[in-house]
Length: 371
Length: 260
Image 1 (tube, helix red, strand yellow):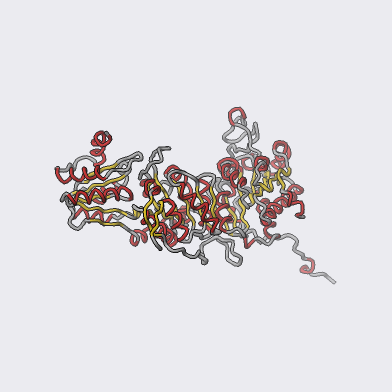
Image 2: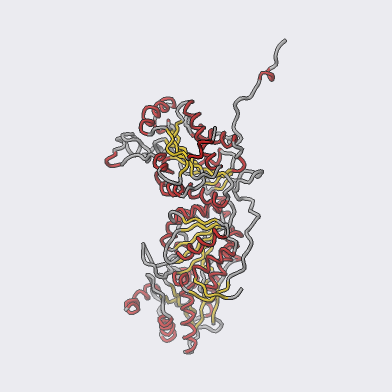
């Protein structure tokens, strides 16, 4: 297939369709809506299920029902809509069902705005719904990577009977870039043994997240956790750039990782030995790679479009071995390469403080950054 | 000569195949068991048992999936119509029904039920109205009658501050997507026979692809009403039916040719 100029939201929708999506349920919300619109035309055209739900609550529970049949199902939304879906997410996780959710993040909290942000990190990576569960989280930084990770999301969801979230920000959903779509996969015809499909001749299937007997719930919790341990062992994904001889490592995901790469290249041109680690899976997180970085570099800069949600995970891995600095724009602002370059220059030229928290030091610099 | 017992035996009443052979958790006297049996008899008679996916709700009927011998999934509180939509859209040739109480369907799930009906979603909803939240111990429900005492309306439901009950069958009947919306009662044998005919009609609606069907069943809750089962049956007749008249609120014209 040749490369086409594709908008992120549309590219993800078409990639999901070509990955064998059988049912899509969603609710309009900016900056994700083009994804739903694309589905509304394409899914009926292909004889597949599409429902514009009454709310995100409706959408996620339609996903829940369709996932019970073993079909490839998906929904998409943006931050406030994802918050509303948390109930269903917990239930789907508790019932151990595969499903794919696309979250095109926007500024918050509350209604916030419709500009790009990464502030859903905590609600997606560290939970948000009730109970012990993990979501497998994939964070693309380009339209092409969004296409590839969307296809991968369905395979991983089925392999581990888990929800996979494709987590991107509004700028990636809205931007157009050349990207290559995958070929159309045939729809699945074989369904897993657990699927409840009202299949004549089959024994009765019951799918539920209820384990009223605590010891039975404990068994379920341990089973879900053991399956997650397999995900941690096999599915950590990340990209490294110019890290071989780096003395400063930047860590950023998605769009902030992409902008940080531009900054790192500019810093390299000035002779500053800097590289970038871009986590592609945010859960499981590349903990080992961050730990190894802390052995080889002099300092680490974490860049995000939130107030330091991934920062805490990096600090946990670094364990105080090297100074960590933090830079972010929040509330729907994408950092500029020059802003990150300035941080890299500062780190290369000044002795770094190791007292206090990197977020507090960033917050003190914020009046100048915002000015 | 003497006639041996086997020649006299003729089984005229058995457990429907669509019911599992287990003891339910329902309180003695509760009409959930009657409602379950009616649904199971209809599924048997229509030959749908093996082609059905049920959707359980949250409330006293949360364990309905243990009692029906059909595939079952379990919805979050109030979301059964959305979950049923997901199942039905993927498996349009299967029979899909929800079984919901009044707190589940007419309070927390009001959005999902109205939207499913408005879409004309081709599912069947069995709605149990017992005028209180049974599972949590008898709190005020959207269906609690004016003046009715519950554990969260201890002085009787005051409509000035606690609002008015919801008449679900009438409400859903106003929607274009609804093909069948009726209210029946489970308080005496005649009413139960009428309820079964309505349940059968509701599933016939789905079989014919006519759209959304809902049967509201006035049901007793002797435990939380603090009455014997027989007095509770009388309470339905004396208090509930005057407020919730039995009747057909929406019947699709094509059902005229369906003889049950």
